Image 1 (cartoon, rainbow, N blue to C red):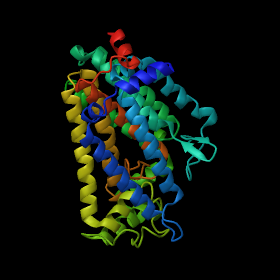
Image 2: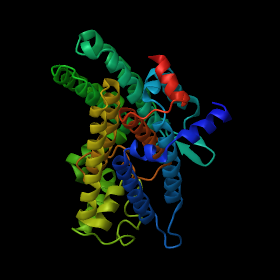
Image 3: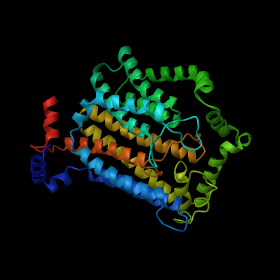
Image 4: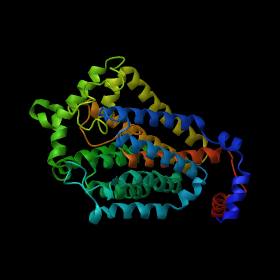
Length: 394
């Protein structure tokens, strides 16, 4: 697109149309979650010297960058993105394979190499691969939607999902692997795969569980699971979750107040700005704040599903389900970790936990939802090259 075409595009964009064809409610919920997250990370990392710590500044920057990216993506016909699935899939595989020679370990996990280090910044490719998987898997489902329950199609769908799952497992990111598995199951269910496949899959997992327990999980992961059932025998592994529960109890109904949490501002609560951020929310804003946060997640997921169902396009609907499942499952698992209902597996709370990679990738997913909403609202700019490209593919 040359400069002249860009000028034409800018002239013909009607601000009123842009606003009307943007899902304002959805965007407001996302921004509310982001603002809430920035406040909580600021509180969790407050040292008494500066209000905005490095983590909080990174979240502000990531939110701004993500929002811009989301708005740009919203003007690209999602049909183009779907039809570029081979490039999307190849890029995702290459990103994961690149971790083998260039990946670095997160703190305290010398057995994993799930991050790229770029200068002083860290990038976790599995966050971006989640979005790529949603795109490619939605396209795959749309191509077999009329015969999705045949054994052949279910087999190839399982192979499709196994590729990112195995790559993520091998790099040591078991938390992300679980999210991929849950997204896969959720999208298969939403696509109408026959229900008998799901108990059959569960039986297969049970049959393979001894191998998974002994060969896939390492000692740390096994001990974290065992600690849930026998906390006294694994005091080191359960310490973080015990402290998180104490913080939740401290908050009571209305909380101790922002920047006033007893455990939220001490080293007694490890990873309080990341994995345990929900405990900070509970300690400082109490049951009220936690309830509002969970309500926002529920409203966000419901809104995403509504956008998908109104799109009139099967692939678009599957993408919406994929994004909704990704956000919901991450939220549920993170809250389960903090309340000691689930083992610690390194899952962040969407929009709330510190981390630039996860925030930007979330907003890329939001851009896809906005694109689907915009397309189903009928907006079209005659000279917009991306729109013409989409029509040329049809």
